[in-house]
Length: 224
Figure 1 (tube, rainbow, N blue to C red):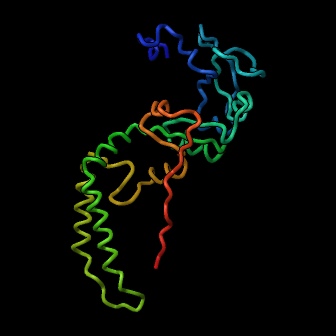
Figure 2 (figure 1 turned 90 degrees about the vertical axis):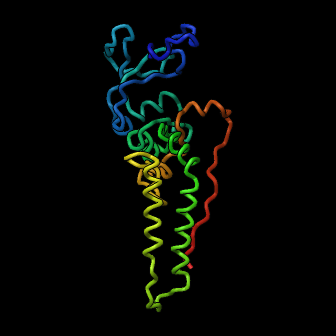
Figure 3 (figure 1 turned 180 degrees about the vertical axis):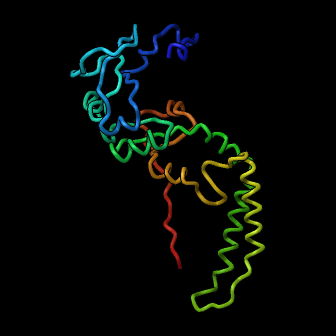
């Protein structure tokens, strides 16, 4: 932390002054379950002091370990009063949401690249959507009594070629959010457990504390 904050803009301000409470070595996701013993850290030697703190957290002090129950009790906030920011979908977001009901903010550094490709390759996304619609239209006039099987080979090949071209735009490993026109497992978990997500938490500084984030409404698809 000294290394990160030893910059001219910090004006020799100590890093501990940026935080109200400081807890290290939380050992997530164990922190959200039984946790470990909470100890105060001697900032001069790095050694853990004997005994467990029982009073409220003191500003400027560093604590080690603990568990979610003790932490929320000492800071006087729990559930939806907490916005938890993390960069790990399982150790940070999923555990804190399912077990503690916290609001969650997932940091996804790869998101910036994903958005750049989305803008540059938008025509491919549109073509893939058109092919999906075309594939559905080939079955639109059929029902359970239909015996003629539509020839979807050409459309299916076009979909595969478009998906391949799109995947190559992301590199060898492809996109972490999409596989063709479908969501990846990571994207599905992100939508379920992350209230907010961004490429960096610094984007929050452009919003007031009273700002209300809302997801766009989504219509439920109906099978006709």
